[in-house]
Amino acid sequence: MKALILSISTGQGHHATGQAVSNCFESLGVVCETLDAYEYVEPLLKGLVSRGYLISTKYIPKVAAKAYDLVVKKSKPMPDYSVGKMTNTFMAQELLGYLDEYKPDMVVCTHVLSSAMMSVLKERGEWKGIVVGIVTDFTLHPLWEEALHIDYYVTPSELLEYQMRHKGMDIGKMLPFGIPIRSEFSYSTDRAEARRALGLSETKPTILLMSGSMGYGKIDKSLKKIDELAMDLQIMVVCGNNKKMYKKISRMQDSLQKDVRVYGYVDNVYLMMDAADCIITKPGGITSSEALAKGLPMIMVNPIPGHEQRNAEFMLNNGLALYATKSFPVDEAVFSLFRHPERVEDLRHTIALYGKKEAALTLCEFLMEKVRERTAEYFSEIAPDAAK
Image 1 (cartoon, helix red, strand yellow):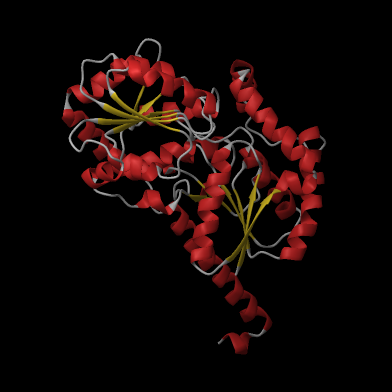
Image 2: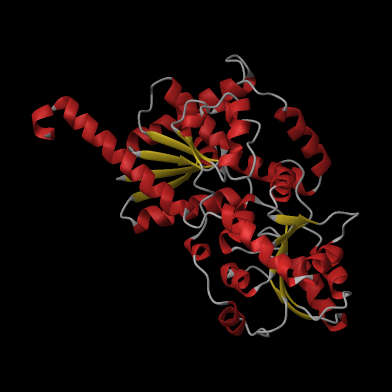
């Protein structure tokens, strides 16, 4: 069998999801390639889209939020003559050459835009293979109604059914398997053992403070507030790729009261989650899914307006996390969470109802079975006696 992971470079989450699915496919013996659809069609376009996303979310988030809210009000596909639809159609045709040469049995789209491109080809009957789109947030992006013709939609929860109906999407295609994450987040190391491995105290309440792989978020301000709490805590601070923030917090360490360990980019967040009693971070779809899979209580801070704001609303409204705001600052949230230890356990119990530990494996096995079914149907049609 052959699979294609089709993505678009806007943020690290889509890449991480694709990597999780790719690794799982390969472990099951499936040949798998990953392709950035925009880079294939026009290399310059990849850079423009990627930089545009970063600039809009980091430097003009309010403008990005208004644009998102404006688009989210639409619930019908774009007209065939619209610029967006014609662009999708053109790019889909350019992509067809790659598909015809590689001939994957299944295409897994980790971005709504790549899903929309494949939907064009499915609608025209130009591509017959299985196509699945992965919703990488706890909400449906405003453009998912442009991908009505793909075969399946992987969602983080069955609770997205209402939004799917509203957008005219076929809920029979919904696969509420969860957002695919790395296999390391599907199992847990004993908390004391994880703390020993990281050189931490085995008895102190432990906080993991993160800003995401790109280092967004005002984690230095969050750290200062937490440090002022009259509580004996140890804190792991992960700055991601934000070297400026890493240096800033490193310089702060001597003036802090708490035991603070600062890290740059790390590849063992799964172990840090096992060692922690709670995580303080932006509510990105991937990070939230990883925390849920680990059963780790979460305090959400500084969401990117738009999809992350809606992630925060989903988590808060379903009792899965606390949400720090100006009127309920992060230090008060930490105090509220740790004041009664049973509160942490209550959160863990609720999280267990929503966490999806094996989303990647569940998806890959499902798709492989569908390919087998289609292959059997094909041979039964062309050679009934041989199929028997």
